[in-house]
Length: 88
Image (tube, rainbow, N blue to C red):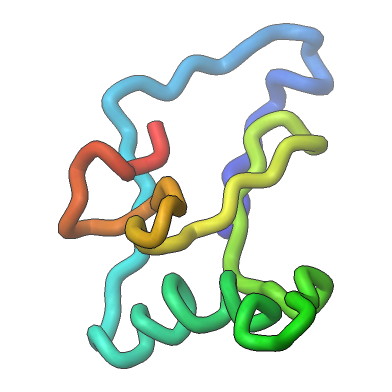
């Protein structure tokens, strides 16, 4: 998903308020995208973080936030069952 406006060209800002981003779909698919992919490299000894993956979102063209479920010391983002994890 890409959201674009003329703000960058015009040298102005656009403000989107009260928006929330989260992933929806079959629970088995969401489990793969939000639980398995982001921590795939952790299953190896030694861990191989370069194998971690998933879906990410960026608001500033440099900082990416990965959609991942909460648990095991991981702060989740985009878990529709955890309103505190919604990207806003």
